[in-house]
Length: 333
Ligand code: AHM
Ligand code: MG
Image (cartoon, rainbow, N blue to C red; front, side, top):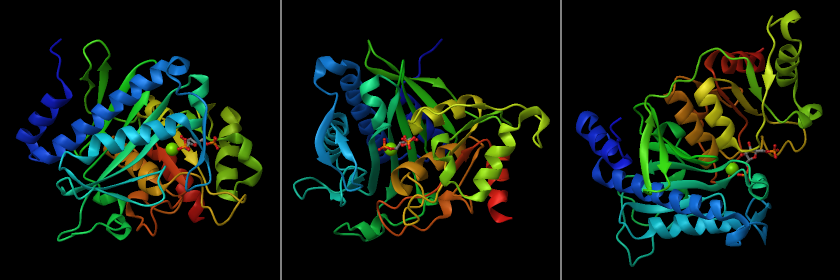
């Protein structure tokens, strides 16, 4: 089999569809290289002093793990000097990170969750990095948080790396979804799945069931009907999977279908759900839609939500189209 590297894929994609200019290609390659470095750290585990808590809190009030901090640093350092970015924003930083004056300023803005699934780091379960790329507004000179407030439909690229038994990079630039596997010996990303498609129908759902008592009626109904199985209104048995790493759950859904949910619930009505719009829900929604699935907040398309602030949270329902449409419909009733 002829091996196609990430670079070759990006160059050919530009030639065929004119959708990956050189600066965007550089950006994607730099992010991919940073993910390779993170993957290397992840793989060291206890031997690399990367496990455990950093004893600091991020803006969300969550205790940071050492690997959260390390991954954030790796992405910042890799992306600062190339001239492809105007600013960055991260789950782990309160405010945006404009490119320092000593470096040239580029036309893109990068958002990331440097290490998704933090609760799984210390137990050797799959974790990942999620990223989203926006265009800097025309004529912007000094980037502000306001410049990032663009709906997810404006993303020019989105992707994630999953650090599991294999390290993979899943990428979309708005023309389908492709998956690259890290060849650990050669240090290169090799195209291993082209044009990923999410099966329309599924028998698998993903939700943290321990929150059931806090759910609102539409989610209660949707899950209850599935749990009734063959003899219930859905007339089939469902299976449940919850990895507690969104990247790993989404990766499974991209490959064999399913629905992933992190709904809003009654625990804290001021926080609509757990996941963050800008660097978790938006990039995943773009990937899922590009693979033929759907992604809503229970009311409408995630990619149409006008963001109000950088770290805003949003309910998430994504995956196989028919299931996302059904649970979204229950919210409307
Ligand atoms: P993180 O970015 O701090 O790791 O949090 C996001 C993660 C998702 O990957 C996952 O789906 C969810 O939190 C799990 O939440 P819970 O622990 O409530 O099951
Ligand atoms: Mg996360």
